[in-house]
Image (cartoon, rainbow, N blue to C red; front, side, top):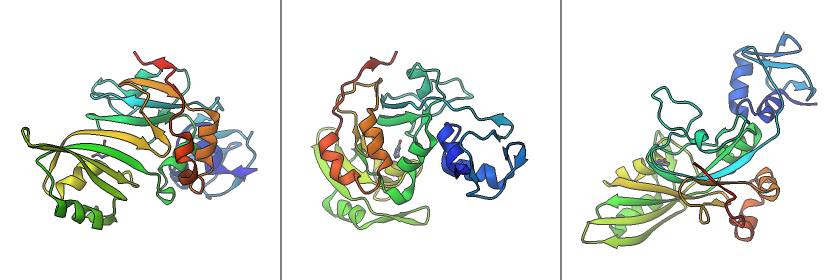
Amino acid sequence: MERLQKVIAQSGFCSRRKAEEYIQAGKVKVEGKVITELGTKVDEKARIEVENHLLTREEKEYYLINKPRGVITSTSDDKNRKIVTDLIPTEARIYPVGRLDYDTTGALLLTNDGEFANIMTHPKNKVEKVYLAKLEGIIKGEQIQTLKKGIVLDGSKIVPSRVKLKKVNTENNTCMVEITIHEGKNHEVKRIFETVGYRVSKLTRERIGIFTVEHLKSGEYRKLTPKEVAIVYSYPKEEKKLIENVGSDTKPVWIAK
Ligand code: URA
């Protein structure tokens, strides 16, 4: 027997948090009966319907893609723009874990495993995200210190664990700054730099948790290894220890069209 929200998430239908919302809104039936209590234990083989969709169990799939610019982090788009799931040919109902802006490039995970997505995005796990930002203007030492001390976004304090000036281009009046954060707020990095007066003109996510796109060209993707998936399931305690050992030890196997 497992908790209902976990079984829904594991089916790949949605994340565990979303499943909790469905349950509380009375949109989940188990063997034909509406269940609204979170944490109700159910048989993993029970007949479960969410908003009248019967859950089916499909094989879990996990991908890491180096997201190109000009692609929406979504499974559909009403304006017919290119979506990231178009880049990975699979029958599984995979979806992005968190999001990157249309013009942001870099490491993005996709899966049909809601539990995996929940672990990667849950604030308590503090999964590290490393971004490289190109700024219009050259950031000053004291502004980097201001960011390191922490700034407030949407009423909560953000303390980047690392802010490092990587490159300065005095001719173009731009610079490259690497920043490591743990949250996943909308346009978080762009808004962080705005607080000290800089516009981000280019942004790439170099790493999320243990996953880097070092060996992936723009648009390339690969499946995660069972070992990598197991590490995520062991979060948060094992992440730090294993990060150096695993890195991205697997080369891309497919090239997205
Ligand atoms: N922060 C941003 O501003 N944009 C992204 O795409 C990701 C993090």
